[in-house]
Image (cartoon, rainbow, N blue to C red; front, side, top):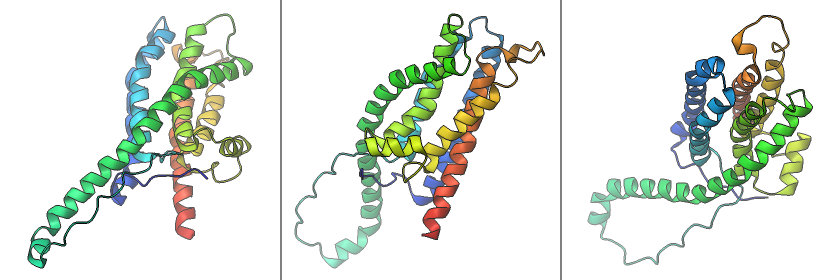
Length: 248
């Protein structure tokens, strides 16, 4: 079983952070949605907005996703002579604050490298896999290539990055994800992946309808469904994981 690290945030903020991330994610997508719809080259719009989504997902992984493998924490310094009681009492509050800040920085430092390496794996590989799946499920093969690749890159960062950070390259955990059974097939990361898949599938429904609306063009409905489905799935997955933890 891969090791995990504690959250760098206090318990209250740890509960709020995923919902804040969801709000920022949908707000960011909504900000470039009109441009995506009206643009004569949606693929260029998708590629130009990818860095913002990548940044949001990377920060989310740093704060809210425990890496599958984390570096060992630095060894503790040898204990010195104990302080007198008066000194310990007067400095207790500042020591606690300093310790909390140091702990947060230490946890974040252990997550930076796994998140960066996961991004290097998830973005190119995920884009190839999602592009293939989109074509299999009906995306144009010889036309709209930039749009298909751009949409695939967004989904790869949206879904693939958190999953890779959480599961690493552990084959057993990935088999659990694919089979939807086991410890790896639960939580926000898995719920977001399922939600994005269902949302993208439902988003494809309006494309062939004869409504003559700009937002029906490829891949706007599919990508919009993926974003909405990801946020809903992440929220539901996180809630179910929390309830299961509380119930023991």
